[in-house]
Amino acid sequence: MTTTPKRDGPTRHIFITGGVVSSLGKGIAAASLGRLLITMGYRVRIQKLDPYLNVDPGTMNPFQHGEVYVTDDGAETDLDLGHYERFLGVPCTRNSTVTSGKIYQSVIQKERAGKYNGGTVQVVPHVTDEIKSHIRSLAGPDVDVVISEVGGTVGDIEGLPFMEAVRQMRHEVGRDYVLFIHLVYIPFIKAAGEIKTKPAQHSVQKLREIGIVPDFLMCRAEKPLSKGVKEKLALFCNVDQDKVIDLPDVPTTIYEVPQVLERQDVHTLVCKRLGLAVRECDMKAWDLMVQHIRRPKDTVTIAMVGKYIDHQDAYKSVTESVDHAAYSHLLKANIVRIESESLEKDPDWQEKLRGVDGILVPGGFGKRGFEGKLRAIRYARETGLPYLGLCLGMQAASIEFARNVLGWADANSTEMNEKTAYPIIVVMESQKDVVAAGNLGGTMRLGSYPCTLTKKTSRTGKLYGGADVVMERHRHRYEFNNAHRAAFEAAGMQFTGVYIPDPAKPEASLVEIIELKGHPFFIATQAHPEFKSSPVEPHPLFRGFLGAAYKHHTKTGSDTEVGLTAVGNEG
Image (cartoon, rainbow, N blue to C red; front, top):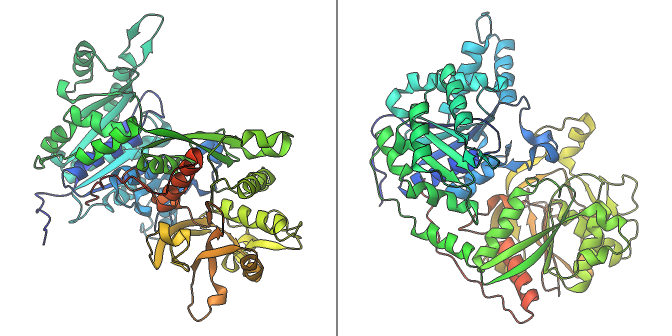
C-alpha cells in the first residue's frame, strides 16, 4: 500500500497576484505551477479570489465574463477553475471560488445574527478575516500546498481587502510557509525597438506599498527576455535574479506553459523556498501529450453554432474539450464559430455549413438565435453529418426531431413559447416555484448527478465503455417532457441515458442523453460533459464525436482511436 510522505510544518500557501494589465494569464500560470507540484507527488489544491461584488458569475452575461464553469458540488464559478481542473486533474469545489459578494454576504449574515457581539463591523478585521477563513478552508493534513490566484491587478480598489488578507497570511501561517508570485507585463515598444520594464517596476512598487514583497516575478512578454532585462528587473524589483521567470507567448498551446516553467526550474525553486523536499518532476507523459498537439496527422473542421460566438471565452470548456478529443486522435481541430442568428437571416445559410466535418451546438439560454440552431441540427441529421449537442443543444435536437420527423410543426420549449401545442421541453417540476419567484442566482439544477445508461449496445453505451452509471455535471432548469418519449422512440430516437431520482417511479426519470438510431453520429446530452474533459483524458462523448468527424472527413476512416499515455492525477 502506497503511503503519502509525512509533511513537515503546516500547509504551504502560494499567492499569485497580477499587475500592469489584466488577462495576462494568472490562471494558466497558477495551474501550470500546480501541475508541476502534482507531478512531484505533492497534494495541491487551488482557488480563485475574485474581487467583483457578484456572489458568483451565474447571473453574469457571457459577453462580459465568459463561460460559467460548474463544479461537482454545484458551484457556478469563474472559467479559471476550468483551467485548474484541466491542468491539475483535481476536482475543484465551491471553496475554490471566493468573490467579494460571497465574502460580504457572509459578513452581513453574521452581523444580522449578532455574531460580532455588537461590535462595529469593518473591512479590517472582519472582511479580511472572512477572506482568510476561505483561504484556510482548502488547507489541512491531506493538502501540501494551496495555490490562491488573486483576480484583478494590484491597485484595484475592490481588490484591496484581498491583498490585505493575503499579506496577513504570511504573518499568521509563518514567513517560511507563504510565497508570493507577482505576474507582470513586459511590453515591447515597436517604434523604439525596445522592451520596457518600467510598468513592471511600478507594479511591484505598488505591491510593496500594500505590504507584500514578491518572492518571484513572472514576466509575460511576446518574446523571451534577455539576461540584461532580467538583471534589471531583479535589481529594481528587489527579486533574486533566478526568481525572475520568463513567460513568453507559447507557439502552439497553453499546455506548453508547464514545460516553460520546468525548464527554468521553477518547481525546484518553489520547493526550496517553502521548505519542501525537492522530488523528481516526471513530465514524460505531459511532454508526449504536447508532442501530439504539435504534430497532428490531419485536421478536422467542426462548426460550433451558438449565440455568444463573438466572445472568445464564452464556450472555453467546449472548445478545449474539442481540442482534447482531437489530440487523442492525433488531429488538429479547426473550430469554425457560427453565430446562430446568421443561419436565420442568411438565405444561403447552408453554405456556412458545407465542408465541415461535424456540428456542435453548446448550451445557452433564451430565444435569440434558437431557430438558427434548429436549422443547423436539421442539416446534420438529414446529411448524416456528425452532431453533438450539449444542454440546450440536446433540447434543440429534440425539438427539431419533433418538428421535422414527427411532423409537429409547433413543437417547442416552454422557455421559448409558453403556449406551444407540443411542449417538448418544459420547466423542471423542482424549478417551477423558483421561476415563479424570479430567484435566479444559484438556483438551477447544478452540479454532478448520476446518469444511468439504458442501452449498452448503443453508441453512447460503447463510448462510456459499457458502464452502468456515469456522473456528469449539469446547469439547467428545463427538461425533456416524458409525455412524448413513446412517440420519439417509435420514430427512431433512443433515450440512452436517464437520471432516475426514485427507482419506484421510473416514469419520473429525467432524459439525460438522446441518440438517433441509424445516424453515423447523432448524440446530445442534457449535461455539460465539457466540464469533465482534460488534455490527458478527453471526455468519451467528445472523443467519439471527433472520431466520427474524422471518419466523415476521410470517408474511409474507422472508429479506431489512438490513445495517449495517461498522466497521473495524484492529490
